Image 1 (cartoon, helix red, strand yellow):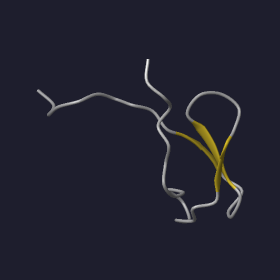
Image 2 (spheres, helix red, strand yellow; image 1 turned 120 degrees about the horizontal axis):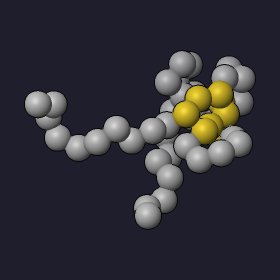
Image 3 (cartoon, helix red, strand yellow; image 1 turned 180 degrees about the vertical axis):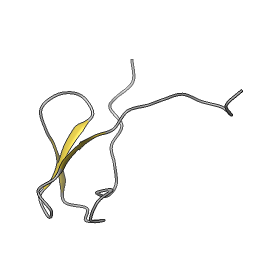
Image 4 (cartoon, rainbow, N blue to C red; image 1 turned 90 degrees about the horizontal axis):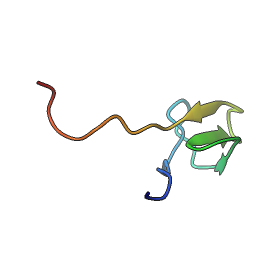
Amino acid sequence: MSERAVPFYCPYCGDEDLVPFEGDGTWHCRACARKFRVTFLGIGAPR
């Protein structure tokens, strides 16, 4: 098992002030007050 994916910026406002929220892969942006989840979908090109 690897460590959680860490986003470098908020996908909504672009700010970098992110903190982990409740649960795996869930982040809170303190700049725009949005919460979002980062998930891994897979590797490679679709068939």
